Image 1 (tube, one colour):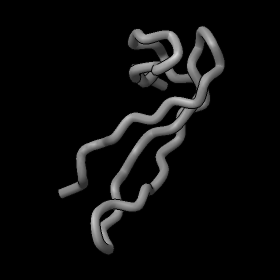
Image 2 (cartoon, one colour; image 1 turned 180 degrees about the horizontal axis):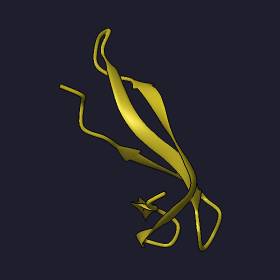
Image 3 (tube, one colour; image 1 turned 60 degrees about the horizontal axis):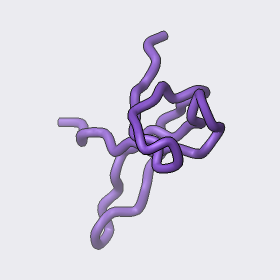
Image 4 (cartoon, helix red, strand yellow; image 1 turned 45 degrees about the vertical axis):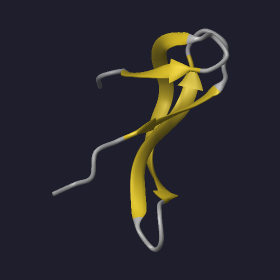
Length: 55
């Protein structure tokens, strides 16, 4: 399994995401946005990464 890299707001740097899973977030109007959520490997802060929509 490939580690997802996302920006950590607390560390102010890109870091590996631990225990990442795909979720759906609310978008504009009635649309849904795909995202990955997990924990920062260094400081254990929750991280999010917006994913491209499926076509």
